Length: 133
Image (cartoon, rainbow, N blue to C red):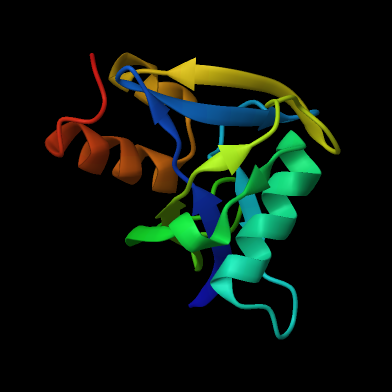
């Protein structure tokens, strides 16, 4: 069993959660990405969000939301993704950059359009009454 270590930003507004779609992909994913060698969760998240969405997360507002594991979308069955999620405030204007083609605000009914680990997070957000139908 191998793990893909990812860090993600959960940003909610009016019962919807921010999600992204990369060029050439058929699923939506929470913004964030893979840790580079030696990076902390905070360093990874701040770097990835700046690269993908052109905004700056406020490191003083990072709050761990949870860590989730599921089958890695598009990988062999022996590959799992571990997604460590954080809430944080940001400054700037959200816009797609780098490999991100689209930004969307999703509700629970959009669950089938996201990756397996994101589906677990959708379920958790719904249980927390943070995500609307």
